[in-house]
Image 1 (cartoon, rainbow, N blue to C red):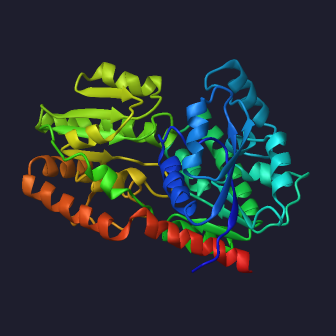
Image 2: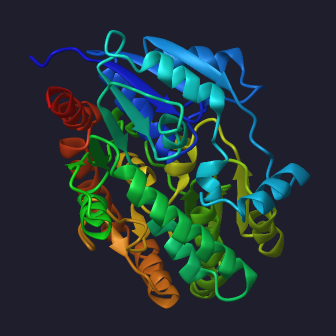
Image 3: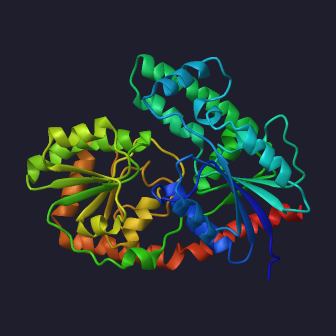
Length: 409
């Protein structure tokens, strides 16, 4: 049996509430790791984080170190001043905003061999504090990279059209690409969440320290607890509605694809389920009474169980979408773009339907809505796939192997 490790895990926020794919992936993997290894969870926390949120960290770590940090609220004066100041920084805004001297000092204090065996940087963002000029650590370091971040921003540039927005996205993409390439090379090992992301980091960045990838996992029993009771014509989109790729995707669907579906099947309805929807997302429901925006929900499973189909119309993104495997585990068929299903081991026509153009996406969705046998076939094949291959214990064992590998170097 592999030896038990003492792992210092770096994160830029608490995991609860479990309302993003990245949080869910980390939560389930850490819970499995904590069964066999001693995990210290070192993270930033907002000043208003409740005791319940902080105490929930004991579910996935043996000890916790919290560093109080306040994010500038989007749309506030401070937020725009921070954005303006970032124009003169070499760092991308999505990295520079997480600079925190207190976190750097805590890492330096804990990053000694007598305390831990390795440091895991969860996402790229904590690296700005791990590799701060005044931090020295004597431990192996592992980057757990849920996305190739620069790919997301490059796709934002492609989807932005022209003008000031495109120019800003292009600046941020170039900075993030340079930062991601240089900083990823400083780690002893890098782990991706898909073979495609691992390939990108090796080829695009010339990295020789990419150990491999861990597949996306899912709690099949949890999502299978709600039996499907689909409402006729009910489509559901699930995702954090304050994340730009989700906002872009759901607006594109509502404006370019959903009207085509409604023209053929007027009874069709769309539920947009996810935390902190922006004004642009709420406007979709004001314009079309067949669209419902729920905001934050305690449990997505009732919404999944109501769906005749889950739609994942992403044009921008990276990594992998946990939401697709969750829908499959819930027994609900999925229609996605190629980017939406990127990095997942799925097959068009066998366990998912894929389409990238508005007309084809509408056609595939209508095909699914009108064919109960197809819905059943896709759902059964998808459930079999995730049940047999993508449970969290198996996924986490792969990650633990990478941790052991860099400790033994």
